[in-house]
Length: 72
Image (tube, rainbow, N blue to C red; front, side, top):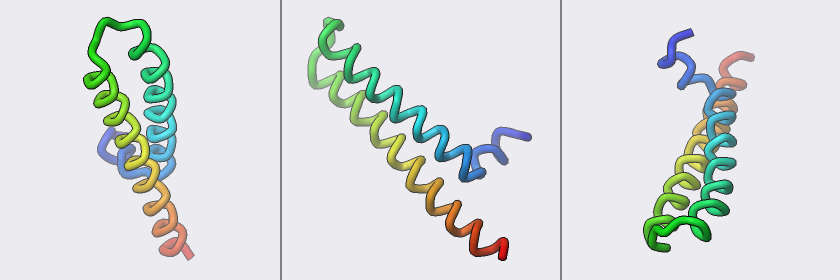
């Protein structure tokens, strides 16, 4: 299966969204206290990761519901 077809699969999008959610949670734990980076930079990176995860999961849910209607 090519990457283009895989990206259109709703189950893959939901899985990728959950992976990004886990990465964002871990980044919040590890980037802020231990790094010498400013709080603004780490907050923006964590926010971007949360945004990507929420977006992927919403698109996956939406496509999964549309896929279910068309298969009947």
